[in-house]
Amino acid sequence: MDGIRIWFWISSIGLAAILFRPAKKMIFTQRVRRAERKIDRQLTEDERQDLEKRTIPMTVFIVVTFSFLFNSVIMNKYY
Image (cartoon, rainbow, N blue to C red; front, side, top):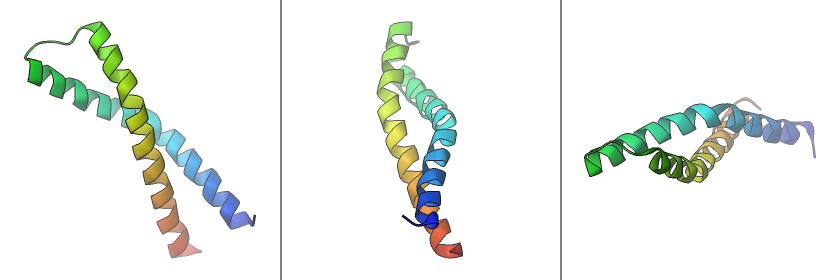
């Protein structure tokens, strides 16, 4: 592999790692508010933990997809 491809993979994975926590918090907050509005009461701690566990795979998919697409656009524009 040449240097540009190695840099593309490293920067994409690094960007995904940096964006994971804030994106997870944002998605989790939106899902909790939506669930509370739907059932018209506060969620219990067990329900919140279950919702958080189900949020992680979706967040990983969104963040990894975004970081690879973002880096491919940047790499094609400047290199």
